[in-house]
Length: 69
Image (cartoon, rainbow, N blue to C red):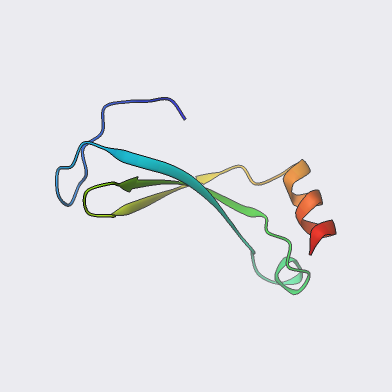
């Protein structure tokens, strides 16, 4: 992720960490535990407030998740 100026909405902190999470959807993907929902996280280092941003969850990552479950 590109480094940009950041200000936390809760505490006005200016430092952050980024991460990523994957979750299952509903229906058949949930039954098969295919983690097809992908989100980027941005967390304030001062207070821990975290925002989630949806990313495109398609492609190779889904195939790997399916075979490793």
